[in-house]
Amino acid sequence: MLQIQGLRKSYGKLVALDGVDLTVEKGETVVIMGPSGCGKSTLIRCVNRLTEPDEGTILLQGQNVLELGHIELQDLRRKVGFVFQQFNLISRLTVLDNVIFHLVLGGMDRDQAATRGRRVLARVGLANTEDRRPHELSGGQQQRVGIARALVTNPEIMLWDEPTASLDPILVGEVLEVMEELVKTTSTTMVIVTHEVSFALRAAERIVFMDKGQIVEEGRPQEVLANPQSEIACLYRKLLVQ
Ligand SMILES: Nc1ncnc2c1ncn2[C@@H]1O[C@H](COP(=O)(O)OP(=O)(O)OP(=O)(O)O)[C@@H](O)[C@H]1O
Ligand SMILES: [Mg+2]
Image (tube, rainbow, N blue to C red; front, side):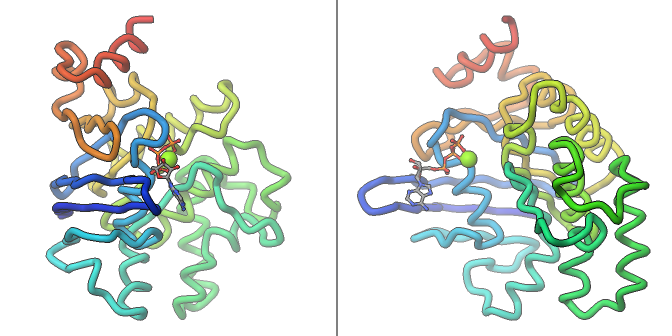
C-alpha cells in the first residue's frame, strides 16, 4: 500500500529526515512514536505532500507520490485522510460544512455531500451538531469533526498527527475511543503518530520508533515493549509501567 524509501528532508542545516524506509501493508495500523523533533510529522506530511521531501521515493498503491502534478495531487489528497493535532477547522463554517468542504470543492452535489457528511458525523458520535460552529464544541468534539472530515472521502489511508496531543486529559479518552473503533471496524490503512502507548498496544499491529530523523526500531507492540532494544523504545516502556 505505502512504500517509502530513502526519504530525506532538511531545513537548512537541520536534518529532519535522515533516510527513512517504511513499508505499510494494506489494512495495517502502524503507530509512530519518538521524541519531539525526531521527524514524525515531517514523515507523514511528506506522504500527501504537505511537506516536500528533498530525496527519496514514496509509492502509494504503486503511484509515485513525488511525481504527481497539481491535479493528480488533489486526487491523492482525497485518497489520503489527514487528522491534524490542532484540528485545523474553518471557524466561520458549520460543522457539516467543515466536513464536506472538500467534497463540494471537488464537484460533488451538495445534497449528496451532506448525506455523506451526516453519516460520518454520526459515526464519530456527533449526530446533532451539524449546524454548530467549531467554537461551540469542546476540543474532543472538534477533533471528532476533524476525524469526520478525514473519513468523508472514504480514504484508502488515514494519517494522524498526534490527534490527542492538544486535548485536555479528560477529553483524550473520547477521541481515542473513536480512533480505536475506527481501527477495528474499517479496513482503512492507518498511520498514527501518538505517544499513547496503551492505545498502541490495543489497536496497532506495529510500532515504529523514530529518533533523530531515523527509524531506530519497529515491531509488534507487545513484543517491542516487552523487550525494547533502542533507547527510545525503553523510554516508552517506562511510560507504560508508570
Ligand atoms: N517548516 C519548518 N521549518 C524549519 N524547521 C522545521 C520545519 N518543520 C519542522 N522543522 C524541524 O524539523 C525537525 C523535525 O520536526 P517534526 O515536526 O517532524 O518533528 P516531530 O517528531 O513531529 O515533533 P513533535 O513531537 O514536537 O511534533 C524539528 O527539529 C523541527 O524543528
Ligand atoms: Mg509533530
